[in-house]
Image (cartoon, rainbow, N blue to C red; front, side, top):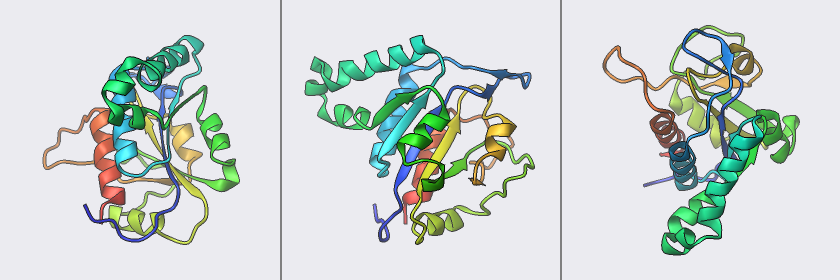
Length: 194
């Protein structure tokens, strides 16, 4: 893998609220163990300093903390150190705003949202991943927080409050329903890889 030059601080957030259900209603989705594991591994592989899991539900946050404890301080972390390393960048917070605060506050963070759809919104879409890579390696001192939604995607209000939208991941067919785990890995590869 070849990386070109220095990169701005990079973080990933997996949002469980506010997201949409299949009917378009705003909901809170459930955290899954597999998402936590796989997104943290992708984030760590591509140089993200943090991978945030957001949920306003205390029991869901406690579940993630339990998973993390198993790998960070339990026998599994000793058995598989690379997994311990990846899960070490995970931070559990109630809302996306808490992740932004952890990275230094709104003025210190540029938020890039992702979606499988090309819906028009008030936030301009970055035209290509080439352009996104250039921005990620630019002189801007703000951290880049790449935000992924669960369930049927991020709400339009959350997307409209971001600084930019990344192009959707599209394959050669009309079918487009990747898991968030796959979408995260592909997105990070396109953003960071030379």
